[in-house]
Image 1 (cartoon, rainbow, N blue to C red):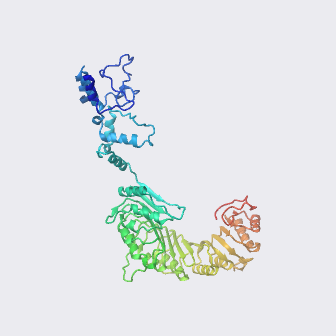
Image 2 (cartoon, rainbow, N blue to C red):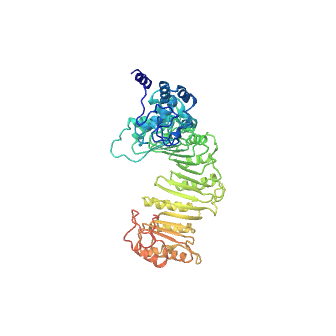
Image 3 (cartoon, rainbow, N blue to C red):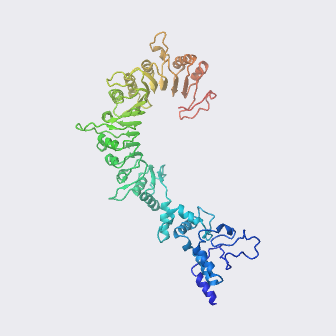
Length: 588
């Protein structure tokens, strides 16, 4: 009994894992009795399943002189041999606690990731050279993380964290906005504190939800924290406090569409410096709340690497008369879009230095008038955009009172600030979308056609009457693309255009689009005959008709091989169209 009590005392405080067989009491170097081959003898080793060959574990780091020598010195003393065996069973001596915590986490807390590992079946090799390699290649695992499992779990989770993207979009059904759960709020705050958020993109119809999410990401009062967020896209939410409490040294993309309060551009410029894309849109603000041109210039000064800048409804307050004219260099600028009043646009353009390889500029003038259009095309395009020949520049005019936009696109603008003609090599695309209010629209088209010089206009799209179409053809004889919407053409309208006997009308026309045009056959016959003559010369002509009439299609198919598209008003293909065997496209 005394001998058994001593064995129990030796084993006290330790129990073998389930499925593990203890080491036999025979000497270690003795082959099991009855074994046929000593080289392939399978001896049960602590911490390993019984079907693992013994020879795989010999020579490991655990069998060093400090462990094997007590076994050999014990000789035939059974008690000393068992003490040496129990020293091998004490894995806290053989393996650092950091490794054990790591294994414990993956086998107990993450069973969903490793479903094959069941509780109590830890096949851990205690005496093996593998642990030495793990320790040498993963030094972060060998640090002390605390005495409690909670500390280990938190430290392990933080060390395994990767940059996350916070994206919230879509619509919520119902009248009331559900509150953000406390668990989600704590998770957002934890991610913000550990600085593992890569992008924040929030656009939703329910502002309270977005504001709760931003509140969870915003630091407490009195604290301004640096964040590694690279992308911010916030729409229809008050982001002034969120942008004021954080610094964004790595922010490259910023899109803000604020709804109630304007973001401080001066503060935003001081807390950023790596912006390449900037999109600012203000909704429902009075003129006094809008930022000035000087505040916007400071934002540009802090971010000289801007490539794409879009400003919607942002500038309304004029720079004071005594404000110095400072040229802000934007050497990497590729695209610039500004939507504001003409005077604010001009003041901003005077203070920007553009690169020679500028790709596109789009200016949307809010105040309507023929003089504003001419000033934008003349002063801005000629005085400020002195670009190299062959560069592509877009100049757009947004007629805010009519809710329409007219964009003029030039492939090359010659140098010159005298306000004369833009040069014979300039090519324009004039685009006039649809809208209601025909009288104002007709006057707008006449003013536009009158102010555009007789250059090579490549495209014209608009809701036109016969009078406007005639004037377009007169003013723009080299037009390439003609898109007629709701055209009201009289029979033989082309015959009223005076031409010389040897000059053909529209010699460069390549594409004609007839959209929602309802008229009789006599008005379209001259135009179709003109296209037939151009096609006979080998020119590539394309005709697209939305809601075509049968007599127009019949005349076209009889005279010229053109691409005919039949569509309903909603954009679906007309199944009853008798010309469905033609090439049907969905360009409309």
